[in-house]
Image (tube, rainbow, N blue to C red; front, side, top):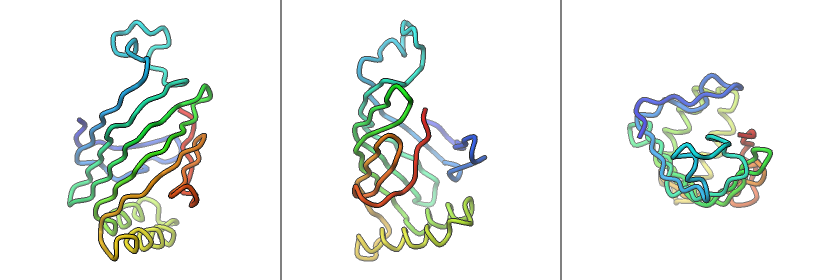
Length: 150
């Protein structure tokens, strides 16, 4: 469990709003040596398979994102998998992300409208995500972006 966590990358000083709470429940196949320190690769995740039982990011005010499903990381560090993404408070997420990425505000508005339409105007939605060598697709068709190699 993390509290008051900030997500950053080399491309963006902060790519998600600060999380009030974040937790992860993940199983890594054949990686017990990572935990007990006997794996010669240490904490390296390349060439790994697993199951994301639950990744939850809570930004407060009901803005909750949940991700779950099987995944793999190849020898080059690219993630692949089929996951379910649940978003609570769609409009609040849109507003938070638009503050960080103002140039993406029109795309975020369109995406939020589509998600809301899927639920008949509701503020929560679950979508299927497919990740293939880092390329993220919603419903297997709509490109959302890329995850750089780990």
